[in-house]
Image (cartoon, rainbow, N blue to C red):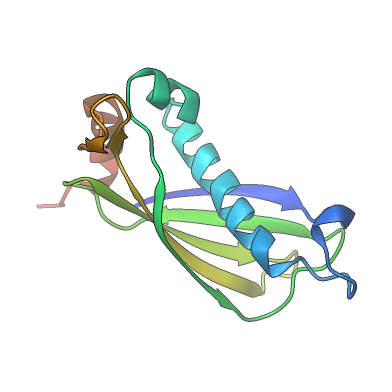
Length: 139
């Protein structure tokens, strides 16, 4: 399993009239978590795209438990539970407030996509080799 954490402070422009993080912005927080997780592996989304792989979202699910409030410092935990073997990758996201309370859970499924060929592809070897050590089975 691979886990990454990053923090985001809820900005005023991201909230609704009640001062709650607007529900549509949770997907943006998931994206920040994914981008930072990939960066921790030594890549950026830009580099993946330059290597000929894009990662469009195919599915997004989100569960809301408590609101994130204006000016809260949110911890975004991004988890890969399985090493992708095909064209799909699933990122599990958990958002916590400063008190450690779980606010939200999400699952984002992306596909590896070759924009030149206009079809799904597999994970780039370079990314696969960086992730593989986190999924070694213990003897």
